[in-house]
Length: 451
Image (cartoon, rainbow, N blue to C red; front, side):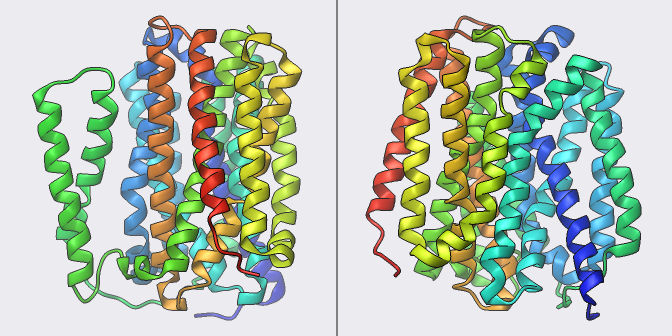
């Protein structure tokens, strides 16, 4: 494993974070162009939302595989390979003649994003001294949280000036530049501990995808075939979990779940992420379909939230160090609860300024929850378990995000007329989010002080 100079380390981290930032933007950018895609491909909102839900499902499926790739492959080859997969998926999406081809491109993008997200966090943690990890993870939080908030802004601007393909072309251009830089600055910084790929575990992991897919589809229509898919999925995933505890070199070392401190951090970061991802899905729809704002302005309306999240993510490490986990989490959960409650109360007023303020409050609260919780969880693990711990946290967080988007999307669909988004549907959606945020707040209140 080569030792990096300070200059090499900076450029290494810059390219790693910039690629992750671009990948993360792609996760949330679709929400702003939902209405355009509904019209272009003549599909209802329930179908077009699969561009986000399906993307996240594939991410979840890939994340548990990341520790094996980190320990068995050259990190440089692995990283550049993920960039290439994303570029191919983006090219497919740009040239999509129908919705299914567009979906295929998005799923391919999801493969690369799912493998990179836990991997780049593991690398950052592994090359950073423990006392500096809160600050380093603050940068990771800045990348992931801010990018999710920036996604609708970028897609809104591109859609206003060009067309929906330009959103994907933007990703393509940036990734080509970053791939060139990766050849120069990315090094093999992770130690390798080669072990055989557990094919049986990888196959049984498909059970998780079956569970999430069947739950998603059952919310629209129920049949016995879906019930069978759900049951088989539960059996397969249960076997996956059992196998990880029983073999010598598990695909995903679930022993980390026996650590109570790790478990707490995992649940807190997942709860925070639900609030963030649901906001990035709901707000562009609210601005465009309820307030009748153009795509550009609906994107720009998310700028205050993105800006605040960026600023506060950098400060969260200092807050965590000074006040400890409980107080930091109380700040974040209070902001998330206040933001969703505000959106629920002011829904019928249809005031863009109020919507912007409360959306910003929700996203700002994420800065004091997600990455501090990840740092807290991984600090409880030995260094050799960090790739597994990061993969577990990231996978669980994405599962929570998928379920959160699934629930809110279905609430919005059922409370609105087919192929529309109604103000009543938004009201019920904000109510569900407020109830969730209240539960999150009271769970944080139960935490024993760590100071």
